[in-house]
Length: 236
Image (cartoon, rainbow, N blue to C red):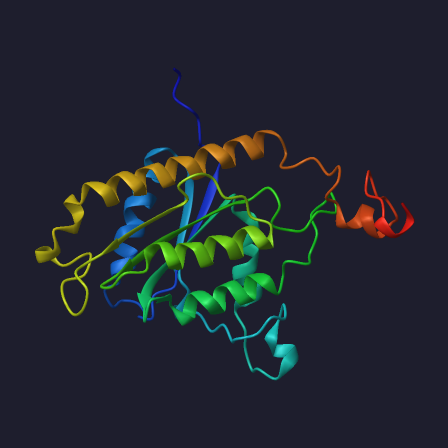
């Protein structure tokens, strides 16, 4: 089997840690495993910490139009729409994804009504995944919430689109702490690798086919009166 060429793909990793740079982020540590794989596959990769940017809470495209003095979201949104793949990283707090991850998803949601050149919602044809770290149970719960949100907004989710690492319940070593020995965790390493390649495979397939056909899912066509095979039950 020939080796796939992923060199025309781009990925954006957004770390939703609560810690501003340059403080150590264990979530970044695990995200770096996926980043390294993508870079070795010649994917164009960009990484950022969401908390390093002045992004207010809200669901409007630019919150300076709604009472805030500044909002870096419009510039970040340009990076989001330019990327074929979006990977959200988040720590677990009280069994949930971080509040920073919730804010990011809300800001993504605020743009989800925008349309691409086919009249589809703007995130159609893009691929999403997530990376979770923590010291308590909740990887699958957080991933379920984040991946549902991404697919609801229009992102495509491949098989095994999440990975994570947690230590023992309660206070204890985190992912990058030497005593955790997390770098040698076979389950996490396997899932992180599978997630990365599944994201790449789906993104490659979508890009080579120019995303999804617009038949049956174009908001623009629907608004223009096209109904394909839909029939209102009231008139049957």
